[in-house]
Image (cartoon, rainbow, N blue to C red):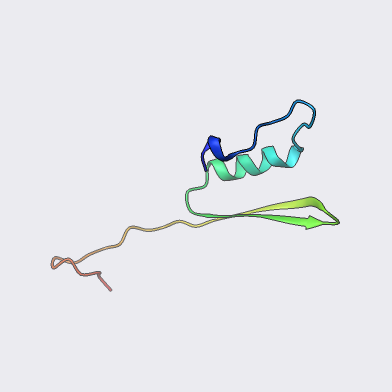
Length: 66
């Protein structure tokens, strides 16, 4: 996501603390999911699931090795 697509920050409406935590979780993530859990309209939990992708191994003919 580019900075151009984020709404301008207003001095009269500070951002909630959980937004900084979400940014922190997303910054180092290459493949995965950041999930927010909401109760009664409030973010109560942030979950991060990271996937590690292994390179595809190919044999001499260029086919995927099994």
